[in-house]
Length: 326
Image (cartoon, rainbow, N blue to C red; front, top):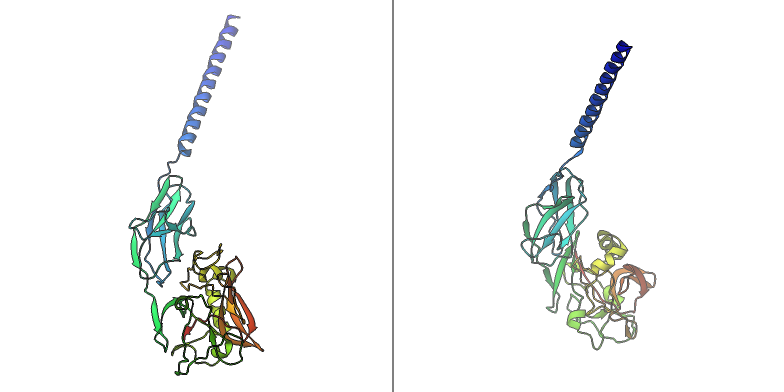
């Protein structure tokens, strides 16, 4: 009996030892796993690329994310301002990437203005900025009509446009353009009595447009296809409407939906004259040089949220005119 009890005691001691070793092993393994799963996330790093594609109202820039800091990049882009230290509290894009290089586009800039831009990216540890790069937007160009009126011009894509409405009183061959307050079937101009014609320009009927002599030398009234080119470049009809319209509600009726004037075109709500001027502050109408049967095509912009529309209407109507460089 004594030997049996002794044997049982020894076995119990061995079993307890084994359990202790197993418990120690498990604790050690868990400690090791916890250590491996703990990762410290630091702020990411990013560089700013050079500025390119400069126009009067836009420019491109971007960056390269060189480290994610051990965390997931949640947003990246570029930020810019006229102040020397731009941050994400200023104008910015959020169309960057979560790794590698990206490029973004700044729009709605002011001509002949110095800006500062840098790339940024954000993870759970914070937001990192690249070096700050400065650039100056291009100045507006200019063109004169035969009467000596000066117009600002703006480059939009591959086209150069007047950034103001035409107000000339003579064809480019020196012939005077007749005035007519009513609808006529020969070339004529008209205006709204309380308009600031220096700002809004004049109305012209399609007969004046189709003469081929209305625009300054080296320029022409755009075809309907050239309006399409402009609209397409600005992102389609819906996007183009806002990109073309002058901002604010000083000239356009509230709410002037979507207006950013990001193109620099600065379209004004001159309305139209179909015997009586109407639509002023509500819509802008700009002739093309393309006929549509007994009508003709024109570009229509509205103070509401509707897109830029290429309509057709009577050739006797008086509409605003913008010219494009040959």
